[in-house]
Amino acid sequence: MEEPPKIQRLSESVVNRIAAGEVIQRPVSAVKELVENSLDAASTSINLTIKDGGLKLIQISDDGHGIRHDDLPILCERHTTSKLSSFEDLQSIKSMGFRGEALASMTYVAHVTVTTITKGQLHGYRVSYRDGVMEHEPRPCAAVKGTQIMVENLFYNMAARRKTLQSSSDDYSKIVDVVSRFAIHHTNVSFSCRKHGAVKADVHTVATSSRLDAIRTVYGVSAAHNLIEVEASDDDPSSSLFEMKGYVSNANYAAKKITMVLFINDRLVEWSALKRAIEIVYAATLPKAAKPFIYISIVLPPENIDVNVHPTKREVSLLNQEVIIEKIQSVIESTLRNSNEARTFQEQTAGQSSTSRINKSKEVNLSPMPSGSRSEKVPVHKLVRTDSLDPAGRLHAYMKVMPGGHLEKNVTLNAVRSSVRQRRSLKDSAELTSVEELLDEINNNYDPGMMDIVKHCTYVGMADDVFALLQHKTHLYLANIVNLSKELMYQQVLSRFGHYNAIQLSDPAPIKDLIILALKEEDIDSECNDDDTFKEKIAEMNTELLKQKAVMLEEYFGIHIDDLGNISRLPVILDQYTPDMDRIPEFVLSLGNDVSYKTLHSLPLHLFMEKSPQFLFLMYMCD
Image (cartoon, helix red, strand yellow):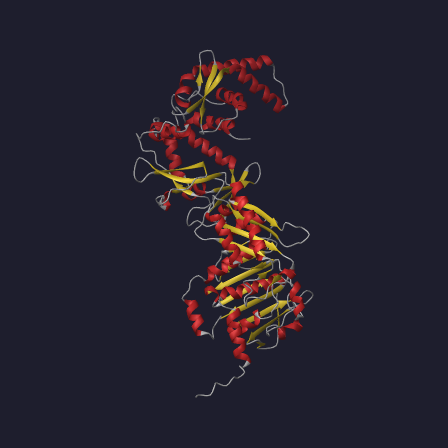
């Protein structure tokens, strides 16, 4: 028989390398450990730069309290930590780190460089580590508040693991996911995570007091819009068993993959039993294959939790786990039941042609969805938003109204107007040579770049009474809304010349009385009072002039003036906009007093169009 093999003590380097492989399983494990160290250092800003999924570079910078110069020699030795000094301290541990293995493990499988400065120091120190020890003495250097750690060439001495990870393309996405989870829980800390060399960060948050705002920033408007706040605690307040707060998605939110963010005593952990319990609740609410969004934060007494059960601290062990799971499951189930009296479904029905479709969003009572029903996928270029208040909301296809097509009986007034405008030939507006010349001048002189900005911009808000902020692509513009509106009105007047929609006044207004009102307002503004007899004479002269030009005004501009000198119809320059009727007196006075009609026989519209649009603006501009 062969002798049994001899038991021998492994060398310290082999032991440390084996332990490193357990703690740092892949790049995301290193990122999680580094972020937790930064949070333990009371940082308010944490920035990460990642290259090649973390294999070539993981760089993290924070503004925490830094590392003392005297502690740098043992910083990366195994089981060196500032978080506890005895085993009993584990019973009340509140920090996220406690083993002193994370940085040590990284030095055994990567090249680690630390740059740090503490409060009151004139300069920082930089030192490199390998296999748990310093490669050189700390060197003075320029540094900003806090600590920067660079982990380069991860798993350079573990060929098999490095080869396996190089074939995986999801390491960076795992890192982004972990940083996103920290960002929505630690709302008092700003986070940034980007690829090396990239201008835009994939995760970028600022410190905020609102958890919902943080979720909206990281996971999008659609997720935040469909969240319900939930709270739970033990039935006996004196026992202080646990407290839970969080947000769960309602029945209108459905994703292909469940997102469950769980923090226990501020530790990012996984709890498969709780996850399964919540999935059972949603299985009765969501359609098949649809998954929810869940954020939960649980606070327990430190003595009721064992944090030392997993090498990467991914899991913890709790007392009274079954009671906590049952209570949380019950609260989520009742919350969903009370909030899901109505559901919103996106339906697609076939239009007149096989390529045209229309979506309708309906509020319907809860009912099982027909099995096997599936809406046909709509091409991306035909998708538009259904909700203007939700920039990242659901999309649907719209139906083009074909000329001569059949209109449904219940179509809206706006749809009828749109159909009429489409059937009307705009070339009819340019029957007169002068109008054609003015339109040609606009078409030949417009700036394509400016047109693209105005056409595809997004309104941000008003800077003051005149200027507005408009966003186009990645640029922010300050636009003079008054000048833009005037130009819009002028071009609308030209393009619709002779084909205006009209506003019918309920009671015809005497032109003479309107002009007298306008003249009195001018006297108030100019602080001078003319004789009333003089006002009467001006009003009578202008009334007679407008009565003479009534046929032209109605044919060209849709302004109807009857034989008695009453105005009863005014043009509509912008559809679906009701003008300020208080401006009618000023508008009528301008038509009679400020427009020269003497040369209309030789220049039918040039002089009129140069003046009248300016006064149309007075009536249609918002104050």
